[in-house]
Length: 360
Ligand SMILES: Cc1ncc(COP(=O)(O)O)c(C=O)c1O
Image 1: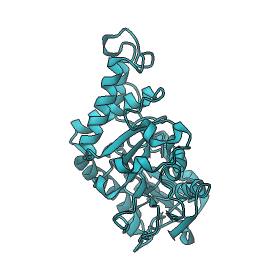
Image 2: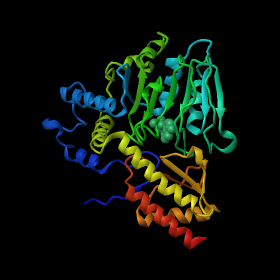
Image 3: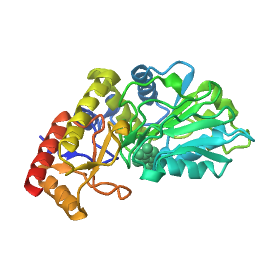
Image 4: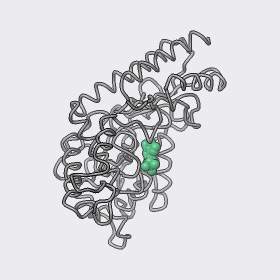
C-alpha cells in the first residue's frame, strides 16, 4: 500500500484513492487499445465514450436540465472570468458583481475590460469574513455574478441572492461544485475549475443555459465563444487527461451515493472542525462569521504567527499536510473537499485539541 497523507491543500487537492487506483490500473492500456489514455486520439470512439459518460454522469449527479449545455474547457476558471462578460455583456447594461473575496475581485477586474461593472455588495470592509445579506441584483443588469465559495477566506453562500427572472445569475463554483445539492435552474451559468471537487487541474467545467449561448457578438474570437464549444467540447483538442480523471471521480461519487450523500458527509466533516474552533475558548479564532461558514475551507487564526507556524509544523509529521492559511487571512486553512475522508478531519481535530492543551 502506497503511503498516503491527509492533504488539506486548497487546490489542486486530494482525489479519492479509488479514482487514482483505477487510473493507475488502466494507465498503460486504455480500453484494450494498447495505448495510454494520454496517447489516444480525441477523435477515437473510445474517447467519445469518455466524453459522453462524463457528461451524462454530471447531468445525472447535478440534475442538470436538458436545456443546459455542459462545456469542458482549458484555461482555468480564470479564463471564465473574461468569457463571462465576453459572452453575456449587453451594450448599455451594467455587469453586476458581488465582491466576496480575491477570486471575485479578479472576476470583477476582467469584467471591467468589457463593460460598466457595478459592485452591488461587498464584504471587503471586514476582510471578506462574511457573505453580504439581502443582496438583490437589479432589473437592468446584463447578468449578476457571485462566487459561491470563497476559497481564500472560508466563506460560502448559504442562500442565493435575489435575481429578477430575466437576469441570469452567474456563479463561480470552483471550490464547492457538487459539495451540496443545488438547483441548476437557479443559475444561467455555473463554472468551476476542476482541481478541487472534480478532478485534477487543467479542465474547467462551464454549464450554460442554452438560450444564453446566442448573446455573444459575432465578431468575438472563436475560442472565446461558449457556443463554439457547446456541441461537444471538441472544437479543439480537449484536455483529455483531466476530463478522464474527472469522469472517474464522477463514477466514484455516483457509487458512494451522489451529491446528497457527499453533502451529508461534508456537513459532518465541517462541524467537527468548527466545533473545535468554537470550543477552544478563543484559542482558535474562526475567520468566517458563523452565518457564512464554508463547508469546504475552514479558516482560522491563533494569537501569534509563531504559534500558527508551530501548529502547521507539528501537523506535518502526523501526515496532516497543507494547512498553512492563504496570505490574505494568514493563520491556518483546512480544505476539506469532497474527497477528504472523515478520518483526516477527525485526526486533524484531535491534533488541534491536543495542540491547544499543550500551548495555551
Ligand atoms: C473560487 C475560485 N475561483 C477561481 C479560481 C481560479 O481557478 P483557476 O486556477 O482554475 O484559474 C480559484 C482557484 O483556486 C477559486 O478558488
